Length: 400
Ligand SMILES: Nc1ncnc2c1ncn2[C@@H]1O[C@H](COP(=O)(O)OP(=O)(O)O)[C@@H](O)[C@H]1O
Ligand SMILES: [Mg+2]
Image 1: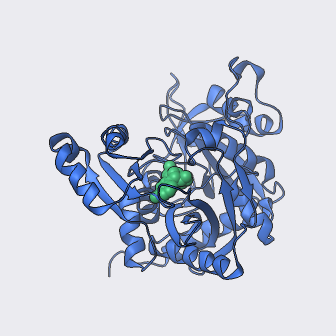
Image 2 (image 1 turned 135 degrees about the horizontal axis):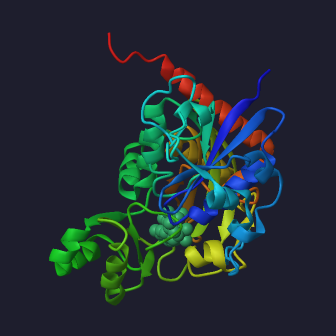
């Protein structure tokens, strides 16, 4: 049987570009090469799409030493510059996905940049399915999914709606609430509102929530732009900070209150119409909360798998994780994150991540590892789910 050609899409314009390089390197390393032929497709930080002519070689060997930066990157999960993906980005050739269903089986057609104007089909890359190992903006938010829908290429993970709903903390909460899921008290405000009437906004927040509050840009990840405001004095600056990143700002009551830190429980979900939940794990951040530094820079945040919670709590978390997944119309995979009050042990659904960190040592694969699904097997299942979803969608008529 011919091998399936899997396009591994990585990098991208988001703040999580480097994390994506690491996730993609892990996938490329672990994917079953007897079943799949890997086509690496990198997206630079300014949004250009590149693939490498000698990709197989690049992927087998180490990245070219010359593309390594002299400044070692501080990300603790590895060195993104040393991944094969970095070499693709440094030496690749431009490709595009035309926003129309592929003709002549070609899903990706190179730009015709050279003088000879080679025909696109000469060096077109055919892929059967794309695994967008992209996190955050333009990767996890439905935009890339929209392009792949237009191109009619099967892809791993959530579709347009699930991705964008899962990216927007305000919309996500509305859907969680509509599904009857427990969420923390929150207020959503607009940047323009804050700029016009900050006093009124402060009153509104204080009438609905108790300090400390967490202030977040609605659409971002990796804790970028998020701060904890302990009192009125800190509220304004926290909103101003979040407003740098989005026009919509979500302000929510801090779980644990003034005295305690929230416990952070995470659960992995896998599937399409009949999703399953993994055992849940717990993150013990080394800082006051799980901010950007604690996630990527500082040593000492701990992953505890399975989470030290009761059997009943574990069941609740798993049930809520599946319900959260379904409430935003997710498919493929997602990591659902919870906040637990350490005293009352109340559990709140915090957020869903539709393309969670995916290195071999990230929480999502580790949770499935602890549930009996190995990393290569997980990749295999995700690809099948992507193809299954695409096939299922093909059954839809678009007109009578
Ligand atoms: N309501 C809250 N109560 C307590 N801690 C919170 C709350 N909201 C966020 N946090 C802390 O901030 C971190 C980042 O917030 P989160 O909503 O997960 O944003 P991101 O999408 O950037 O991961 C969480 O992991 C947690 O440590
Ligand atoms: Mg989070």
